[in-house]
Amino acid sequence: MLNAVKNLLTRRQIIGSGMGILGVGVAGVVTRNSPAIAQPAYKPAKEPPIPDEKKLGWAVVGLGKFATQQIIPSFSQCKQSKLVALVSGDRAKAENYARQYNVNPKNIYNYENYDSLRNNPEVDIIYIVLPNGLHAEYTIRGAQAGKHILCEKPMANTVEECQAMIAACNQANRKLMIAYRAQYEPFNLEAIAIAQKKQLGQLKAIVADHGRNLDPKDPADVWRMNKKLAGGGSLFDIGIYSLQAARYITGEEPTEVCAMTYSTPNDPRFKEVEENVNFILRFPSGVLANCTSSYGYSSTKRFQVFGSNGTLELDPATDYYRHQLTVKREKVQEERQIQEQNQFALEMDHLSESVMQDRQPKTPGEEGLQDVRLMLAIYEAARTGRTISVDSRE
Image (cartoon, rainbow, N blue to C red):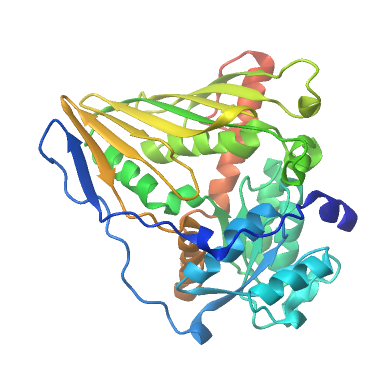
């Protein structure tokens, strides 16, 4: 397992620390051909960071491209979290990042001595940033070592693994949170508020699309072509953002799903995992969500919400650094100007705060379990050609 992880995680060098945050203008709206009709959309938190010695200590498990280019640099923007330990199968690589981010060399671990984190009081929370097929093992071992867990999405490859992760954290009395960054990102939060406060009238439909080209030459994508490690193809990796958007915009759980999949014949990238998934979700209120995911076209990260009195578009919706939110009602078009914030820092600080205050995080293990259940139902619908009822699934 150690060699597999070492070979699959990228060796690319980290991009400079400037990637961590992008700033724009003050919160508000810009309208076209009309006067402003909305109040400022979002006010960023103004609370200063707590003293460094009071911040909770984090260990990052896995030093692939996502961890080194997004997660680790984002600790500089955290107010309640600090990086204190690294777990990697590549000691030299870990030492390099430890030097860059002032991590004590004694706090470098590998996958064999990972369990000895239990003996390190500096580590309060572990962030699992490994291929999907390893999430369950390292979450369970981390909880048994007495640490709280933030696990990357998707939570795991199977319902049974998700349930085991929840049980292990409950037994250890540790928090478990799934890293659904969009649920902590200001533009997405504003879109949720607009929809659920009926500013578009009665919701009628949602369209959500997420796609990118899978690159077989990129070490960060190699494991995504391996079903055992990835769990699935585009649906598990980026289609989950479309699924999440439909769920958090409506605030409801779907009752039925139908779906189709397609992969380009003889494309070696899709020998084990699917390229394209189109799926429809029916919600109790009557909202229909048309969702897509793809590993075969250029980067797309957007959703649209249609109501009886207006529409909303967030495009990009799930980018790391930039978002654009447009609201249309009758002849009025608003472009919401919201302060960009580092969503990774926001989600990490949310878990730190949840631990400090002993409360359940916003996206607990049960949230991740629900998505896995729904994605497996989507696969079943595509495989059988039937509409699958999910309102009574266990």
